[in-house]
Length: 390
View 1 (cartoon, one colour):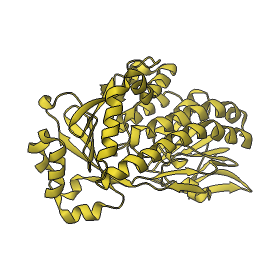
View 2: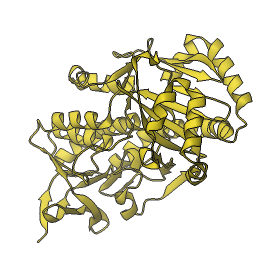
View 3: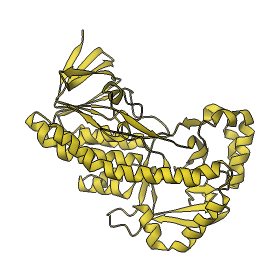
View 4: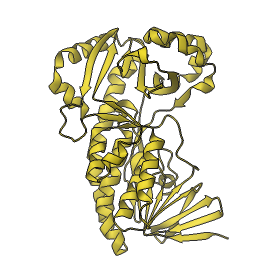
């Protein structure tokens, strides 16, 4: 037997976009069902750079003080080590926001915080271990979803379905929404390495002429992202783990005694980097947000923040129509019109960084570009570095 649930909004995906949207709609009195295919939020190496703009949204929602009780690391500025020289990058200290820092917070902790906030409202329901498999249609309109859940087949009926199920979105595939993919020259290997008190102040990115390592301070360990050329994992594996450890050691010598803990390729996780954007984010009765609408590169750590901004903008425009029982196509088109320009701008910047810097580094021809970047950062002054932080 298929179990049927009715709501005013059904959200597929319990990531940042889906959970924040569900929370804000429930707070506005809308009945919401969020379907999450996993049993919990514990997936490693997810976006967890919570920018000052997102912290400002949390302040406006009245929950900033509670959020900052969640364990996190604060970064008031970012430095880089480029060709062996430490240079200043973006600073957050002069931003016109309440929090003049970026919070590094594991995504599972952030999502659990949002779940706790949303669960205060009786109109919010999170169903985990529920995998969306198809859309339910009423003529030309989307009228719900069908899912495989723990208790058997599940159907959720709603005037609006939101696809927030990531870059491999089932929702957008079933809706036949057209996606434009942009070429990306990089993939990323994620790993954990032990951190010691003697490691010193954080340098976010360490860059050589042919290598790039990002290190995020997690307190007792470093969460590291090592950039490799697109599709280059097999070639790296042919060289072997000792060669990779040598590459990392040459970039960050103080890691030397800890690199042997990378004992097998299972200790590294590959992120296949994708940058794409839907031509149209909606169909009658359906809207895509976050990575389901626009997959982002990890460059800049902006993905989680754009997803949350999507959710806030959507909640503001959807709450009234959903309480009234219907969402016109014009409302859905208006959400895309509002959110697409900043998405295009940031994706354009990411693609430019990929093409003009990252591709050169990974090809071993990046030294000249890096010298120019190092000179610019060294002499740009706080004004330009502050603009980088926005």
